Image (cartoon, rainbow, N blue to C red; front, top):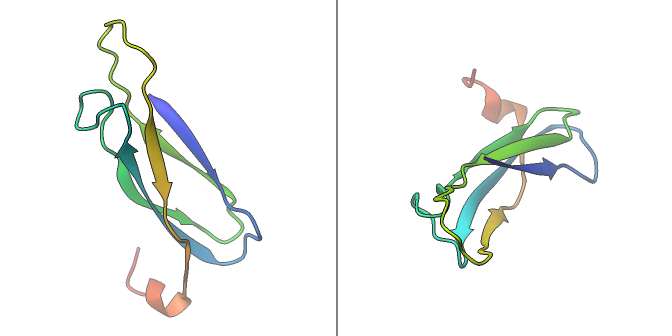
Length: 87
């Protein structure tokens, strides 16, 4: 398991959502080298860090270093009116 820490900078006021996803490089997703991971982080007011968990597959076979990428999308400020009806 690999943990990627995402830090909110330039202030911590308001609720912000940030989409993310893994992208293949030389390492292959779909459970071959890592499990594809995607979702949305939701930072609450005054919250500055979150973590994304990525499952890395260890097949115990010698392999050269491989890589994959983590795409972090554009953060969006969530208006209070948009939050109504959400738990």
